[in-house]
Image (cartoon, rainbow, N blue to C red; front, side, top):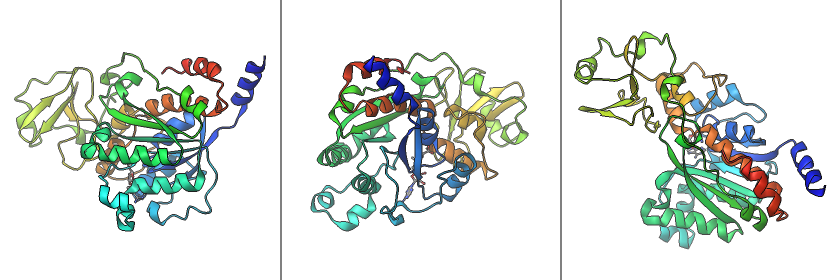
Length: 342
Ligand SMILES: C[S@@+](CC[C@H](N)C(=O)[O-])C[C@H]1O[C@@H](n2cnc3c(N)ncnc32)[C@H](O)[C@@H]1O
């Protein structure tokens, strides 16, 4: 009876508040809000990303600003600080000696400032898969020890978008840190499930001519290859790379800028690149997510920089339950978590 009462009370909560740091277009926000969190603070330096963010989210919206210049003193309370921050090497000497210029250079230290001022129940970080081995393991060691020094316990796991219903091979590390031991023990990352969809289900029909290579300079090279309908390709300077059948390779932030790095497919009308909308879809954004009228290069950049939304949502659901069970009611939490295995 007590168990049910607690569960109902938790379900009635309007959402745990979170900080959306390095927010980009709001991939983390979208996933966490689906999981039942509520953003109370958003920040990113990129004015173009803010255009996309503000078309889709408000209260708070995003006013582009360097996170170092944002005054943290007047900012609201929160349960969770979340962010997919840029991965940079730390100078260990600088870190140990607390050099101020070294601190300023590394954005992770600004996350720590936010953690110090807000003391959230949990921290959720997302980054490239190789964060753990980056700079011979130093980067990860600094992240881990800095959070541990502040009383947080960490769990981390590399998750692939493929296991969360998206036909994109995108592996990213997720780090969840908890101040409360009960939450830490209750939490585990979702396993995901085998993929059923292929990228073809996410393609548009009637795509604008400008995305097709037919008659363009690269076409002379492309037509030398037998390009199949069920595979995604990438032009690599002098050759065409073929990816695993049915699956899109990791979308990258620079894919719009090099010209030919946007994944290439064949459809009924010819050979073309993916459109920005298709790239957002392949990151798990619904079609109701609005895209502003900015250059395709900027939209490709934003899609490639973002996170796979269903992965964040799955992690967020389990994180929320773990935070809500900070009293160590592990038995209930494990059952509640199982309901959100994916
Ligand atoms: C890997 S992206 C995160 C994207 C985001 N998770 C999303 O779903 O779109 C890193 C973000 O950090 C932002 N950034 C880099 N330096 C910054 C700074 N000094 N202050 C605020 N944001 C910064 C970039 O503009 C970029 O959007």
